[in-house]
Length: 422
Image (cartoon, rainbow, N blue to C red; front, side):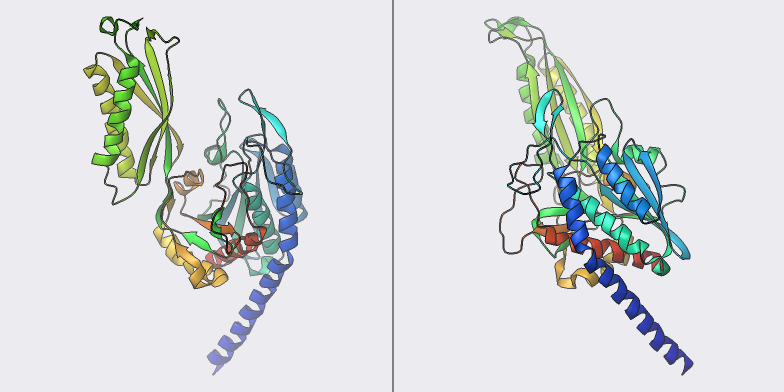
């Protein structure tokens, strides 16, 4: 009988606790939207998020959290210690904008201009990072108001330069990890989200294992022999060799990659060669990207690209070499962590609104955190229900429905409480 009474009163306590948190979340929606509009109107590029970081830090300090600034140049990290002991969970939001000139007609439209890589351009939150910041600021406030319900510690990570640091600089998740963001205290798991303009508001999408691709930048240098355009037999044409290499690389995808397992992409995005119409040049350069969702496929593709580049060039009398630069790893959702936390997402969104998705060939440097600790990364709906088309991320017309952000606050809050409550 005592056990029955205990469970009865415990259920009432838990129910009241949840009601209190739900109210706090609903009450904070207007603030989250206001913060998002401010960040949208005042965007800053990677490793230059100075004012953005100041606003974030001021909010977190106002909540009484332990705050560190200047992490990985402009990052902000804050600790919230619950009233009860337990694990450490990290929540991450990216904070940088893009060199994109906004075309939306919004009262909080970005009018910011800058020079990026010697080109004058606008600056815009064209990927939704402004919403990520506002959502995590909201989560921080809700959890700070409910410390008594937290078993453990929450580490809030506001990360700069997700879109990649400027040439010649370090930045992003890699630099944060290098500077110890996952230590002191040591993080046990990490959660992150990305708003999606093509997913209806109220919907969450996820996938176990690889959800976003590794991103490799490659450079192929081709060496031939310069000659007059009227006498190709007296030289070695690096442009012809480049064409043959491009053609050959695609056979790795179409004939060697087991695409029934995961998708893979090889794209040559830039070719530079020659100075004049009647001169076969001495050299050519190709720059492109490789996207993979499986580590074994990634290794195989890079090995075969190297072999093919060198062999094709030699077959046509020239030389060629290839170098790779890793931009992101595979965004890999730990299967056990996903299984444990999926009920939390279903609780806040409804089971029918939490959907399994196919992997995307876009990249995310959240992947570097997941190489160190188990992580779960998911997509949050940002498209107005009923719409059938949306403007892609990284474009001047990109926009999201702000009503989608409240579910983001709910999801990250519930994940945190449930993970620490295990």
